[in-house]
Image 1 (cartoon, one colour):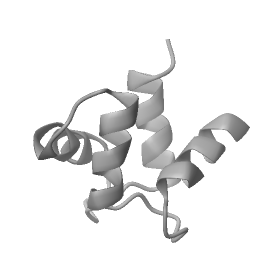
Image 2: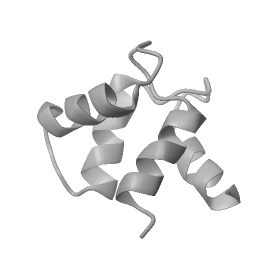
Image 3: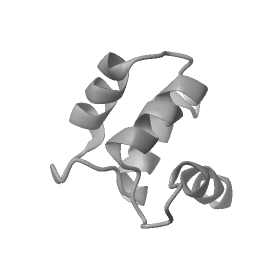
Length: 70
């Protein structure tokens, strides 16, 4: 869990506790090796459970379990 928090904090560039749409673009590019708004929009739609247009740590954990942890 500590590594997930470190990874979350790495992408949370402004340290506001959320990964914004712009920060999510970089996350998708680096972690999923996909460029462009399409995939980041898809990730936001799938994992933004409270529909606030940003990813909090709990939502990021769900994303990581689906895409990063095998």
